[in-house]
Length: 465
Image (cartoon, rainbow, N blue to C red; front, side, top):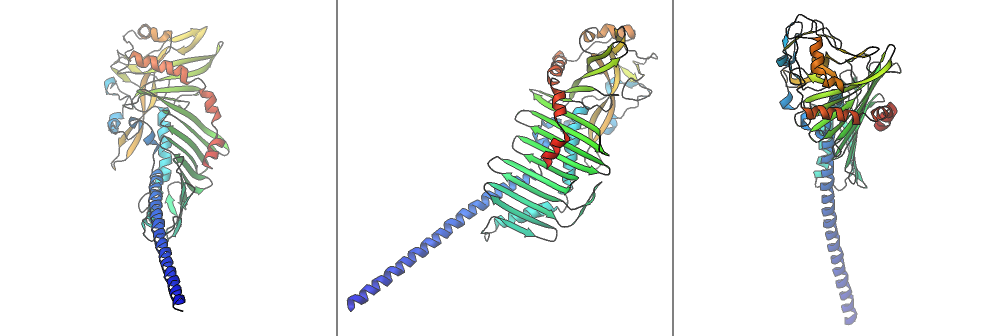
């Protein structure tokens, strides 16, 4: 009997030890799971922070700093780029080096997309409140699950992490007023594909007002579809930091007709940024391609080259290319200029205090065709700070000289003097810059029209979704 009792006692003791071992294992397992969960929460929080940063990413982070409108060294006083050409203006007081129409199209579109989004992210931002709520969830010691949903009076937010992809969603519950769009109730969703390092953000207001952008360490793409009154504005822009390239496409339709379409590309080459495009609102009957050459480190427009084809009586179509020059630094011999009537091309003007009209000379093939040289007003864009410290853009009609490439460049001094005996002028633009803009003009325009036509509204709509 005593042996039986001892045996039972030993079994009970063994069971007790086993129970203790199991309980210890459970506790250790809980600690391991808690530790792993804490690590996962910290990891997901890092992804969430990265995704939140993507919500505020800017295309300007992907281009040379000097090419941004807000670059401090290039900001001007508005009064310094305001001229009265109805009387003679000293050429040395005319500012050059602003943005041309091609690069201004890039910055215009970037600003449009950022403006579309900034209304969702100002003041008592719903998005900020939502992401803060999600971060607080991950920070909580009571958090035992990553996926989460949160509901408040202002918004509903969701967080989900599955198979290496983090997704968040923010739905506004009350409307907000946006200029031109009126009362809207936006929905914002964002996804972070950790393996690809790709963050995607979608902003949905309505079927005619939505945006999408995709951000990686080296690339930024965005598309915007914005309906304003009776017109639909569609744009796509791409900035590739690794390859130093980018492109932009914009189109405006009204009553199912395309009223405006433009395309441009940029290429970074050493200390230069070359921008190629077909947008030139100031050029009458524009059937042209333009490449603008900038100094990458200063953001200054150095010169640009224009290719155009025109039809002339008797001889038909003629294609020619012309380089544009600043009157103050790229050419000698000009001291002042007067333009009684401002318009973008073929203006009557006077230089160097003379009462005689400035005259061009013409190339001739049976009839006069293109001008060898002439002065016209070109649109240039400068930036200044307003009274609230915000960067504003000022469009300025700036007098510049164009000279046709080839023999016309070589004979410029003789040609200008023969037509205007009181002017002795030579080209002083750095020879390296003059050579580069012409060389790039030939190579970068090759295939440009094909790429331009390949970019369509359907392609942009497919990207936006």
